[in-house]
Length: 167
Image 1 (cartoon, rainbow, N blue to C red):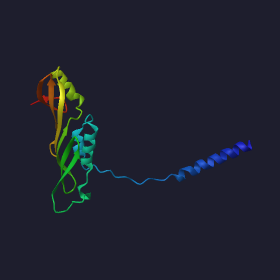
Image 2: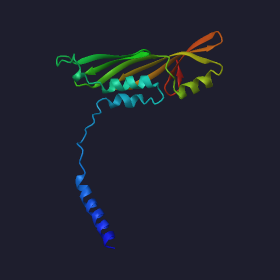
Image 3: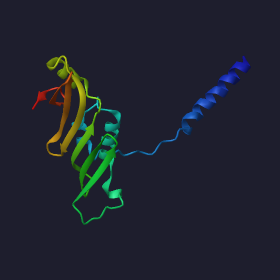
Image 4: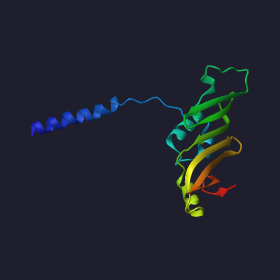
């Protein structure tokens, strides 16, 4: 019985001391400087390399770049991949003002594929270009320019990210 009470006392002693050893971590501040850009794209189905390049453009800090000078109002920065590019325009505070993006032969979202299959049942997508134009005041405009083939026939179609065919 004495042994059991000693073990309980020993365990109780460690449980009282244990909370005193917890360390607090320093606080972290997250900056959402260009959240409008990423939020307006909302492209979960776009190819992974395209998403990564868009995220890189969103988190890019002009003030930390080697060519930053207080004299300039805008900065033009290009981001490249083998399949395409982003030309981004930032102001002197680092805010993303606009982008012009072009990517070739990326995987198209399911809404675009479904719209093409419904409207053009015997046609296949042979080539595509994904274009994005973002302006801070207007948001992003996403367009897929598709080349469809059916045997030797070819047509060109424009589709937005929601699958609406136009032009």
